Image 1: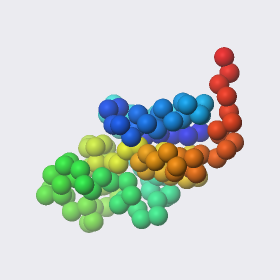
Image 2: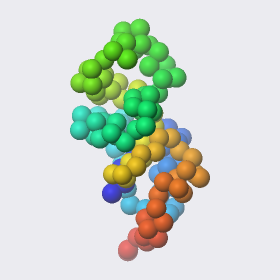
Image 3: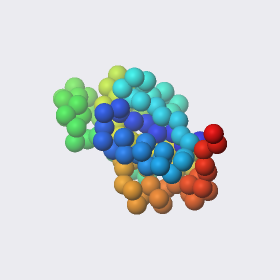
Image 4: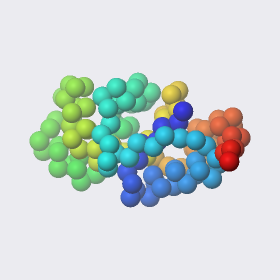
Length: 127
């Protein structure tokens, strides 16, 4: 099952949802505006990153800059980081697309084609 972590108003999140629906791909959406990421989910996502938290955190965001005055993100323990991310979900880059084996952060149509195996793209909705 493909899981997409989104922020409702985010253009990239809307584009990922539209791309998946256009290609008739079933997915589960976790809207981070209304639902906190679970500790287990965050740890699972981290396992599939190449560069750790720098792939998942939006280091150019206003919230990151603001919280950097309060927290040294490089020195936080994993538990502390998860607590901060749960309290401030805007810290996460969006969308995050995860299929249980691979992770993609952000929206790029060419990358989506590479990320989503053809097998998923051939699935049609049954009515």
